[in-house]
Amino acid sequence: MKKEITPAPVFPAQQTAAVVPKLGGPVEIRTDYPTPSPGANEVLAKVLYTGVCQSDLHTKCGTAAGADGSPITKVKLPHVGGHEGVGRVVELGSGCGDDVKLGALVGIRFASRICRRCDACLAGREQYCPKATNHLHHEDGSFQEYIVLDADYLAILPDDIDPSVIGPVLCAGLTAYKAVKEANVKPMDWVVVSGAGGGLGHLAVQYAKAHGASVVAIDSGKEKGEYLKTLGINAYVDISITPSPTDMVQTLTQGGAHVVIVTSANGRAFAQAADMLRIGGILGCVGIPPGKQYIETPVSSIVIRGLRIQGNLVGSLKECLEAVEYVRRGLVKPRIEVRAFDELPQVYDDLEQGRIAGRVVLKVAKDE
Image (cartoon, rainbow, N blue to C red):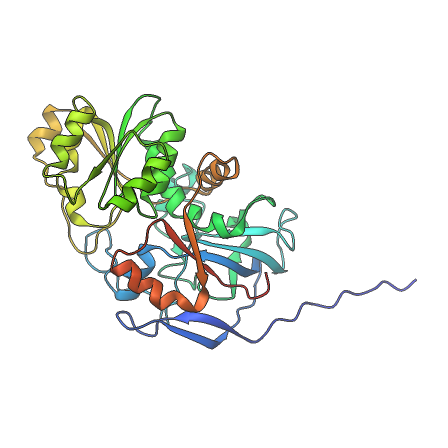
């Protein structure tokens, strides 16, 4: 009997993508952007949903800060952002491993490729790989209908997840989880989350609660406070009506928090955050303000009070899947608002004006 040959899948030569021709310029929804093809050890994924991160906005505007505080200018142009996506594998390049299957749900994360040989990669901290590339500055991200991904560094997701919910977990959730994990949060610890009502903050609150912490949420406005109370916080500090949030935190925690996690991208949130800590406390820095912003804490205070300062840049692939598992088990519930893909320009405007609570997720695929 003659063996039946399965025809190769055919995809459109052009696709819809959100394109930024020049940093600082507008984002354009184009329908003629080239559809990529997978090479060796690569897969082509159809993007189903994608979250929208503050880092996408800062990169688009040309204000994203590098390690020295200066704007990141080495960005692939035209720029296609997006690094909180969930896709479905629709084509395999040559050489893909047996664990990569057609139809599998996969994550489109910040990190895109790593060297696997440097000290950071070998230590399971590959997000710090000096040769790494990412979907924000070097490769096209999830703001397009189809994307090519490295099959050897693929976040293969469980089949039973909700793809509209998981996207924000791959960056915001992972970063929040990493901050809680690195601070070694324990039951009954006092954890302060600054910017608690935002996309990062509301997840940090939940990961801290899942570790047994007592949480003080800091943000602005009654509406955010009411929502955060539904997450089981122990106290809410509304900075719009509280003369001294630092004094309030010291009172609520009876001497200061064990951990303060700053998820806001506003430099003012970092300035006095360390003053909210108790002796031996940990300041977890998560949000990245544009420009050169500083933590205004005297060195003498850090030394005499035994404070620690930790930076948290997303997390490893293993930690990403751990963060996803908390959501899969219902321990963490991202607050999302699903919008149409072509609403991205309005979403960016809403982000700039601080009108978004939780995370906006764009529906990219038209037929799923």
